[in-house]
Structure formats: C-alpha cells, structure tokens
Amino acid sequence: MAKTFPTDWDIEDYRDDTEPDDHWALRKEFMRVHKGKFSEEYLVALARTFTNIEFMGCMYPAALMIRIAELSKDVARDYREVKKTKLQRTFVSASNAAENKVRYIDKSSLFVLMIF
Image (cartoon, rainbow, N blue to C red; front, side):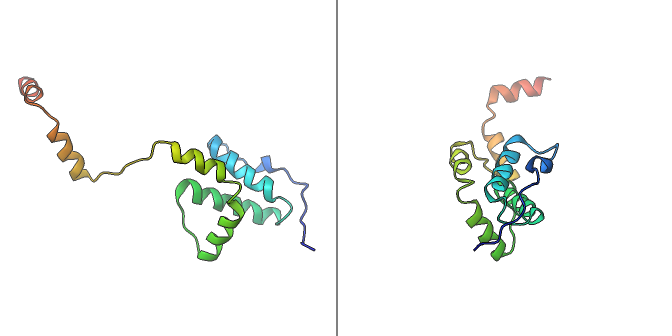
C-alpha cells in the first residue's frame, strides 16, 4: 500500500504575488494532481522545480529531472501543445543584427539622415 500524506493544507497559500497567472496555473495543477502523494514541503519544492524547468529552462541533477518528467507528463501536456503554436524567440548575434540593419538602409534614407 502506498504511503499517503496529509491533504489538509491549502495550495493557494503558495501563490506568489509576482507570479504570472500561467506560471501559477501550471504549478497549482501540479500540486493538485500530486497532493497526498508527498509531504507538503516536498511537493511545494517539486512544483517550484517543475515550473523552473518549464518556464526558465533550468537544469537539475539527472535523477530529479527524470522524476519531474514522470510527474509532469500529464500535467504539462496541454501547456506544451499551446507553447508549440506560440511565437518563438530567435536570437541573433549583435554583429548579424548590425549587418542586417545596414543592409536594409536605402540611399534615400541615408540622404535624409545626412541633411539633419
């Protein structure tokens, strides 16, 4: 028989005032799904680790990454599907950005800049 833990604590107590709504929703769902399977303190730490991985790309020791992956696969499925359709950032080196900017300046723009 699997060990159970108290569930008489309120998940809402762990919301941070500065936490974005989507981050909180995912972290809250993670805690809701796994409440009673772990101690309160451990579950709160796991949930924070999970959102750090999802939203900030943090990396942790392999054993913890595997555990979080197993615990989050159903919780994060919808979020990951939506994320695939969102605009992805493209990083460009400063030298490439400057080169592209110069490439797109036409002569009439250059002339106007010289007058002022």
